[in-house]
Image (cartoon, rainbow, N blue to C red; front, side, top):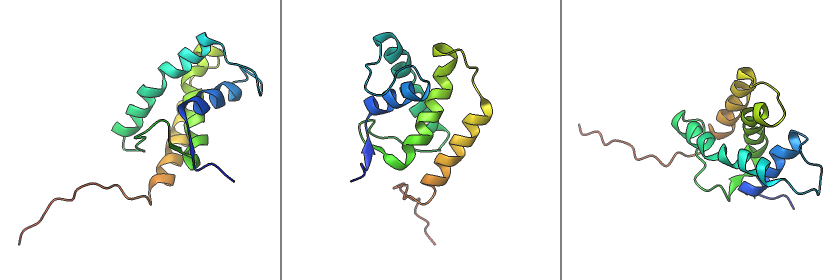
Length: 116
């Protein structure tokens, strides 16, 4: 059965595999883990401020967002880990993908009351 959510650790390991820092089943060095982990919270905040998506709990990340989030984070940390420059185009592509995935979800915002 498919997992409905992913965790922060899965996100970190997925980024490391995408950047080919580790192979399947290999442990991630603490130095690499720290660099990736230190960039997660700023990314989550940026996505929230830009109203792209809200990640309320990084231990329950919706699986349908996971690939786009992995690519965004890999794009951010790749200059530090593998020397590949940051790509503004990739950032826009994956942010648009996240925006599309979250467009039909309820926002749970309180609507202002209009009195007639």
